[in-house]
Length: 328
Image (cartoon, rainbow, N blue to C red; front, side, top):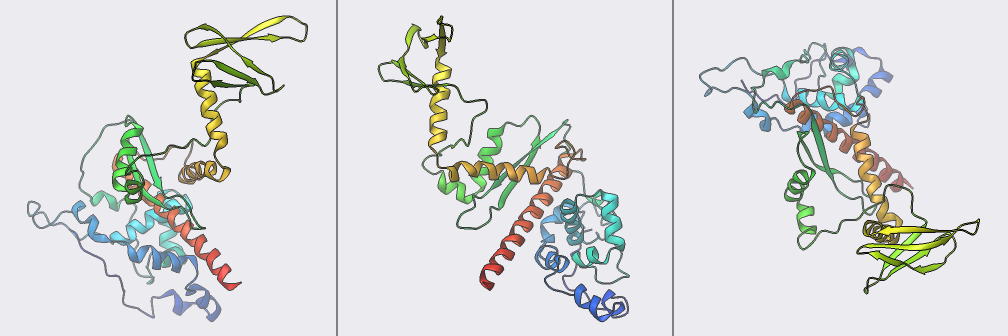
């Protein structure tokens, strides 16, 4: 049965850790700027439990009311903490039972308050069971501008057979900034190309004449047409013998793309690296970029929790840097 947990809890001086610590330790334990108190204030206490209500039985579900659920706020906060420290379920449960700092981050300020068990998600009703062998995750984030951090605005998990364009279409529709930006057109910027750059730069003129520039010598040659969409040039080797170098339309297209990429300012090209950094952070605690979960629901829950932790860390560091700038 769904039951909301109270945001504020009654203080008990006999079961609170603060009453058992010496003055110095108590001051450190209650420090509002400490990570545990920041986490509770900005994360745990702001979790909206109402959105999880459909996952629980109600009085209208065949008169099966069942026992009240454990604190959803604490359960979700535990999952986010787990993604932050990169531990197993068992290690997390141990931390939340015996580590005062973790209990404080979850709002369990009383020593006699029981920690939810790691299998409390089993109270959820099974919905949308899927039989797939793998899952893929797509992250949508903002571009950092004017010193502000990039933040994740949407995260989606689907079966491994989902096409990339499915993710892209959903992300554009759901993200307001993307919809506004892409109202007329979308400019796709490539940050780089795979493979070693060619020795030759190819430039196809309007009259289909191919101009070939040797980057090593600076020499410019007009290629000889061989057949449609294929050309060749004559090269003189060190031994005086001649050889031919052939170029196809795909080589011309790749050269054009490379010129466009190299013409993009470095700051613009670097934005691609920020996207890769987000995926690196997302997979940081995984083994071979694979999670330990098997169902779509669990993967989705893990993805949301991990991205929430990443956003919290980015905002935390931004807030710290901003405070240092103000102090100067």
